[in-house]
Image (cartoon, rainbow, N blue to C red; front, side, top):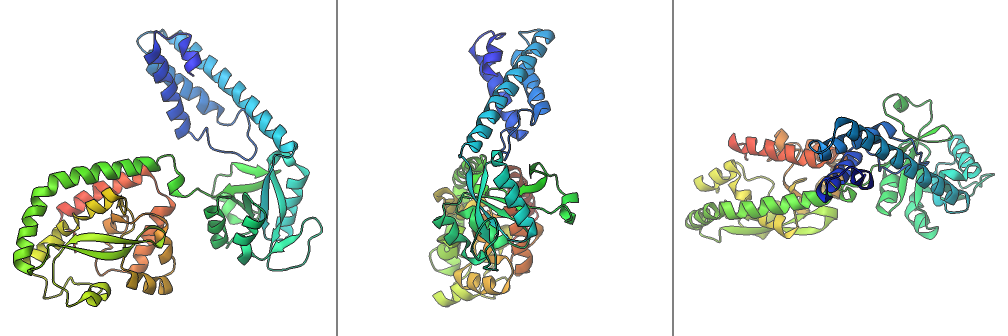
Length: 411
């Protein structure tokens, strides 16, 4: 795009603008998304459209409409040619041994047919090494390397870089493989109902494949989440410093102890973090602080403490946790180790909440799930947020949190 823009540009700024705009638009249109079998014409319409928009933005005042159209056409031609050369190079590399070592989970008929197609067509770049299956019988085309429970060991021992699930109900295997750096695919049978509900872009000789989403931390937008956290936390601490100082004096007078207290919580990947809050009551001892579930109706909470909890001002010191990197503005609320152990044993999916940094507010909280509310509902809301994380979702949650605070929605 920069080369094309330079042919009609009137200096470096328009050329730079055109290049930046087209990269951003192509990113939004998933033009750069990885494909098993790349094609030069994939997203061709989007490429042409992004070129036209970029040319309009860059040269709206310095070039005629005809020049802009010609610029967009030249960019589209060059982009498609470049992608064609890249696709040719990738396919040729695959045919000559540059394939990805692949593990197929499930040695049933569907898994065997898929493995045979991959062996017969190396241009797809997935070289099956063997199967993982509960049956230990050898297959005629590929060996059974072990059982599904041994997936971590097999991936490391055979240096596997891709895993194909030839069936459903294998979520723990998929997440283990993804955590070990593998690309994970779900191989769908055409008879399955799900094929009528999802858009299938990947395939191997007509076998539909769904690529597993990468973890949120691998998203190109993840650094922006951290940047937003730091900006909001630093600004919040500066603006609320007078409020925190006043609260500290009042708490000291009411409770008779340090206005701040620290409490061990469980953060991302189960790592312990120390959360800072304003003190709203004086616990009997350390054990009570770690194991008492709710103090919403505790008589030891004074008038000031109740006001702080109702306005959520007692949570403000956690902005320091965000600034340190222990927490995020948006994420699952961290819980104490005692309750994490208990809920992980009894609540389905509770432990999966720790795939993402803990947050001051979250998807569950803006739906009223805070204080003494259903833990199962909280876990479901938190996991839904993590599975579909986006920067836009974080901004939406922040805005709804502000509205909740204005309505005095604290506990």
